[in-house]
Image 1 (cartoon, rainbow, N blue to C red):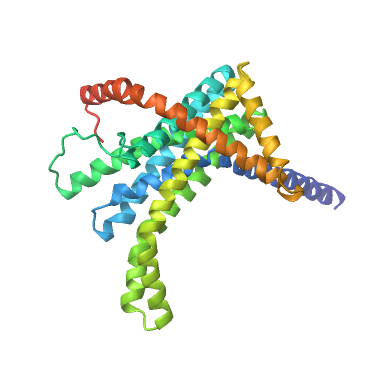
Image 2 (cartoon, helix red, strand yellow):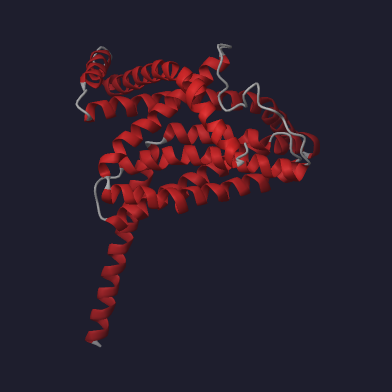
Length: 327
């Protein structure tokens, strides 16, 4: 009997350790995932355009197909690569992180330029890209594949940023944390996209069919609010991209021995924060730092626009044409 009690006690201790480890993994995954806010918001803002023009009954299946592609991107392709780099080439992570940050700055600046009528296309097609006449099934296939390819780029940014935010630990802890980040973010992004895409239909159904006046009014409100909400989501996503991208570059420069920019931003934020009442000091410093990082990201992105559109994009389009990629 005493042996059985000892065994149960050992099992309970193991279970407690396992539960604590799981809590640590989830907590670290949430912390690491939050570092990738810019790419996550942009992913959620970009995806709804891929179901635009399709019948309502095809919207959720298309989103589910893109979500499955996103799981594969993160868990099958990017997770092993990230763990390999962490184990055998950790020196490569900061440059890759800075490359991802530069891409965020480029994308954000291009969206700003496009919105101001100064060129750029954001995630839209280039003006000289030929449109193809496709039947609905082939068009759905083309759109889904294009969305999965765009997701791969954003997922690479998310996974790299998250990997860099995970403190040095065991291989399995890093693997579990990064896998948890991948699963949590994919569910959050595409769950949100599904809600956003179907919000109009839900609002319209409430407005037209509900026997309760309050619900009909709510439905009409949803229909009126959604276009503005989508524009707001795009703005917030763009601002987050510039902020995160700029902060990644500033931090990377500091790690490479060029810390004057980061120190200057810190000093300015300190002065601004301490000019405010005591209860607002921390918030003032954070907002000032984020704003300067965002402005720096925008400036860098504007510089990168010609490089992206005149060098990288033509090369990528040539490769796409050569190997038969679409989207």
